Image 1: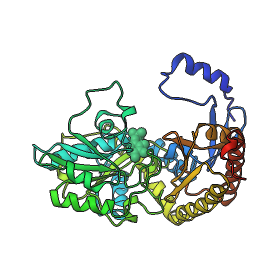
Image 2: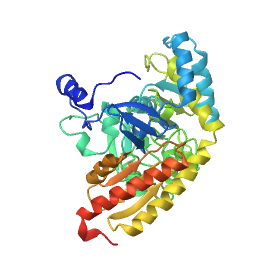
Image 3: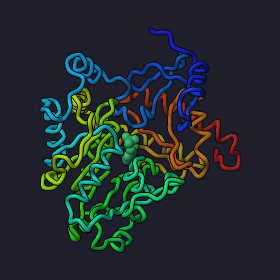
Image 4: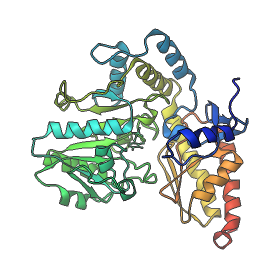
Length: 406
Ligand SMILES: *Cc1c(COP(=O)(O)O)cnc(C)c1O
């Protein structure tokens, strides 16, 4: 094994040379395998949040590693002025698993959403430019996606934002209807909100959006950057609801941990992204394509869609047991391996206690403990991780004596 710098030395490099736009734990992660990861001091962690949702197959999934190693020695990058067999094959694989869609590839979620926004504008008449999105949503950090992200904390100091974005409360059809006018071209929504706290859509909401989009000829965009590629137990989140979007955006887990993004669009809309109107230099490059194909093949061959659903139910059962023990757990929200624990108290101390015990988890919206575990998490690591979680909860509960039931 290579000699790694100790965390303290790496910290000093960051202090001196890296822009401080992230809150970072002072831990230097150096090696991962499946749902386990090690730091430079040799400490091992169970990872219930591998790669911020990007590592849907865990760390270093063997088939992705092999495909990338092979590809990188053959051809690293060629521009989209040429054909690439692997990009074509990858698009076909995504198409047959979705809605007979056509694909455009880019490198990240925010870029995928920018492409979708442009497509909605280009596909409708020129005077139509408004897009409706939802409170608590998250769509990315570039100006179009950022403006679509209806969370004021991300907008502070950055105005004026892009014109034409309007927000409705997530789940509110009536408010959506009231925002639609002759200038509206699209609706952008996560079928299940991720960053917003694993928020499931109320019954009939997505169906209602489809009906509104049809009635007013709007482009319905589902941001599946977090829900896509099998995380919820279906290839795509929309498949749980039987509501097919016009455009679907992907990134995070799309390439098994390698950077990659893309959109899937209904065939009829695709020609609106005509030559010259949009591009991504690295989009659909040979390495991302090879990794994307290997990711889909792994999920299929290892029966991981079923595994994701099964794990979701295991988590639900286990977390409901914790809920009956700890009064500060308000609600458990689960969609396959997309799991949120709604707390009535600050989630920060829980994340810290988990980390100290060797379990990596996330907290979003201040009070939601979020797991985006790998869909191939083993029974043993599920069990061990949940035990660490329980002991972390016990530890924090002692500091919250008033809310501890047993
Ligand atoms: C993470 C995320 C994005 C942004 O993806 P980036 O790759 O960071 O640009 C967009 N939408 C959703 C739903 C996400 O979870």
